[in-house]
Length: 321
Image (cartoon, rainbow, N blue to C red; front, side, top):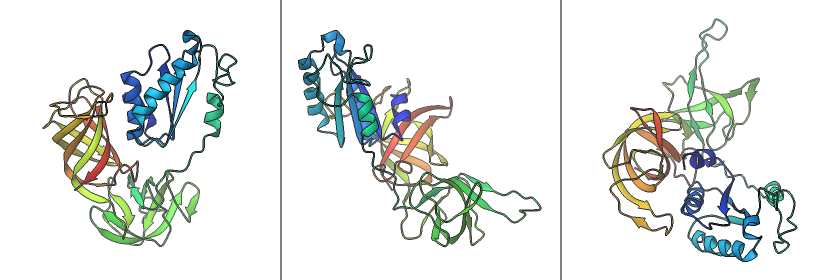
């Protein structure tokens, strides 16, 4: 689950492997559910080892029907099933002579031709400040820039912005990247901003448009994927990292865990390794967030065990206050 969440957090397409001999397992369902949580728009289910079931189309279509019925409850816009034998190369690069009953394209052709629509948010300006640039040299004695990666929206010189959480207003004087100034910046460009006014800005602050601001709050409602052998329990305390901002968080409430086989919500006293659940977190400092459905970057976070420095959870924000 750890590799699935971290590797797929910025993906446009996810591939889930199913062993044709064993059918749809709990791990298959968990990985597909995580793909839907991460709002990956395209899911490819490869039913592998078809050679070990004599390339039987009934086995393939049985798996297709079972997983399709289950996945109909999820938000997966596009799901494709491909029967393959990775060992023999069937339907991997070229169509399989052993599975003439499968009339669609092989895996590589599908990957090369799937239409990927940009899912980056270009409407809401979000610029988490990563570092303050003060060369303090004779040549650039008065220079002050703010570096980071654009997480949303389109930035242009002259635009009025607000710096959160302070609420200070200013205008963008210039946008710079390696090699000189630019007239526009958008996700996921790494740039430095200079402002018309001298402001007190530090790492973890966020630059946004004056009339389009994220939610600033200390309480988060979120879905999390738990990655630690030590269970998550209400009252536990962790470090939380959201964009470039770090704070401490306490688990105020564990609302439920998700049964990935039935997709039902179950009351529980703890989240175990690889389980997925909904929690309410109370943070020590305000965070500037958007729902994950609106912005993957400002809508996600990780929890860190400060004793071991291990990342113990990845979270997708549903709301905040």
